[in-house]
Image 1: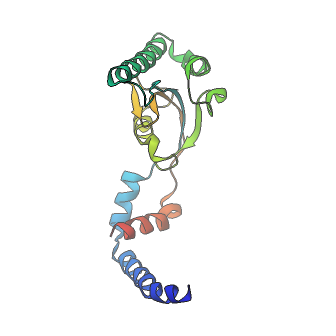
Image 2: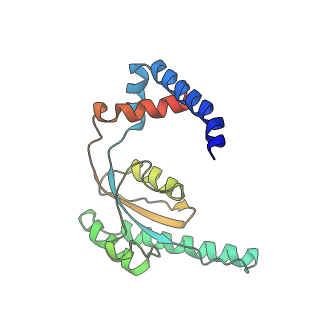
Image 3: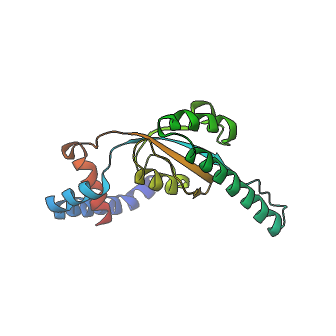
Length: 180
């Protein structure tokens, strides 16, 4: 094992050197641009998940039918939210979660994913996160959100202020120097 470490050490040190060099190349302007465009406040989000009842043994036709049924179900949930008064949305959403959502881990907590940021959840949720950030607080997605997991309706409850630049500056430099 020691021999392997001896072989790896020069590469590791070289990599550190490259990253240190890269970090020095990053200007305040680049840091500010990244901060303005990429750093966002945490948002509190809930979702309703409908998973198509697809199995490997199904024919393509049966799979398509299962997909359509799941999409129809999520659309009917959206329609139900559309006919709900704005002040009652959160309550109605929580009821719909209990009735329909197939995400067992969030079903009992009103579909809550808690406070999230762009990289809090796994890549499976990428589309959900993107759509959640487009919403205003108290609003939900009026079009079906599709992820690896199935079909979602997403509700954004609340937004926290984003971190101060001085608190995330080191993270930004790390990120930019890796890209560099």
